[in-house]
Image (cartoon, rainbow, N blue to C red; front, side, top):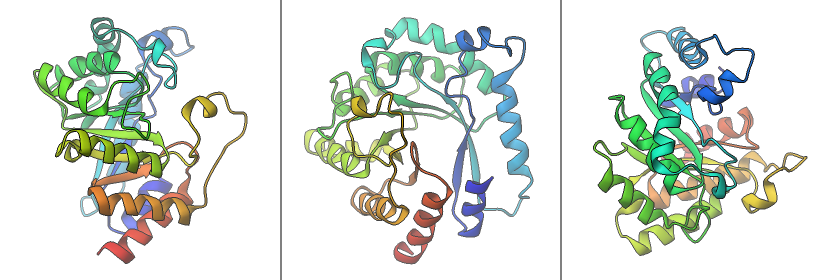
Length: 260
């Protein structure tokens, strides 16, 4: 609710994601909640919060969130495409049953699993987005170029994603990665519709398993993110690891002061 209050304060549309990044059926079965509708309940919870703002509120879009089966920083653990479709299908069905506005897969390190998730999402009849972890050279962690990943999925899925996203990387990495994407495939950067920033510029391998939170001052992170917005016109910007309400507040306030 703290984040949504920022959107209302500055009259900005926002999207809120269900807290289900690891709520796939495998993990639910291994938990004390094996008999509960975890994904549907998450969707209901956020829907009730949205409703509390009334019909005149700035728009809030609810996304049903999933993530990779394995470690998001370890592309070797990514599922093959067909296995990924089968593995992720129950969660996609559960989130759709929860009546989310769209589906969203975050922190994807490899094309194979992303393509399988896209197949599962496309069958739900909802808009959906896929969000990758990238390097500054414009490649996914598995070495696939972002351009190839976008083109492969767009060309091979019956209902392609509404758009793509990048999350869990520092703004300078995002800027360099999208510049590489645009250089390799002009126009493809327009398919990137969201960026959620990590507050550390370190390589994902250096961050994986870190025992301490590496963060950045809100004003520094926001300034870098707004530079990315001015350059690539990505419509949605938000936070990932290391961010809190102070980062979102500063980003929204600075955007309203400088962009409008």
